[in-house]
Image 1: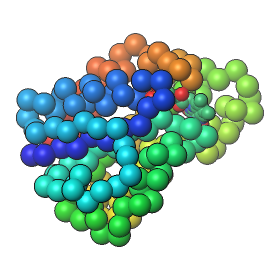
Image 2: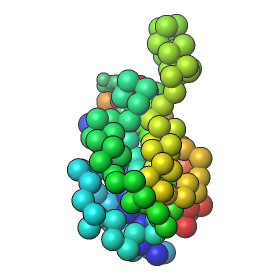
Image 3: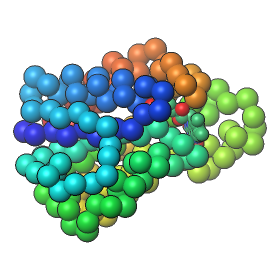
Length: 156
Ligand SMILES: Cc1cc2nc3c(=O)[nH]c(=O)nc-3n(C[C@H](O)[C@H](O)[C@H](O)COP(=O)(O)O)c2cc1C
């Protein structure tokens, strides 16, 4: 089993979640953990499971994540299982009513990532996951890294 975890991160929170997932995979898979960068076909060679992680920025995946997804050729994920997670603030903890409404209405990065991965041919193996940060720069809510590890175990 070859697993590739690609993530983007501005303040290190999504990176920590990605690392927790990599650690959970490590005993049972050959794991590559890397920051998302422009698509190159070699990256996906032999990969069975792709996990993509992004901070939610403006209700969407980060720019680098979107660029990666857009550049994936049609069908390039055929035969690859895929899952996606984001980091996000908890709408219940947002003070502004307007922002709370927008967060609930427009959603997070996980679903657009899953839609794009599926469109490029991947078989989606889990619902999207969101891990909570307590402010834009973090830290992660207590217990989120453990939750990420538990989720990762369900993907293998
Ligand atoms: C410009 C900007 C836009 C953001 N937009 C959202 C958003 O739409 N929804 C949300 O839940 N969090 C939003 N956040 C909070 C980010 O999700 C948070 O910074 C991120 O999860 C931290 O992960 P990182 O440390 O890996 O960058 C935003 C933060 C910034 C700085």
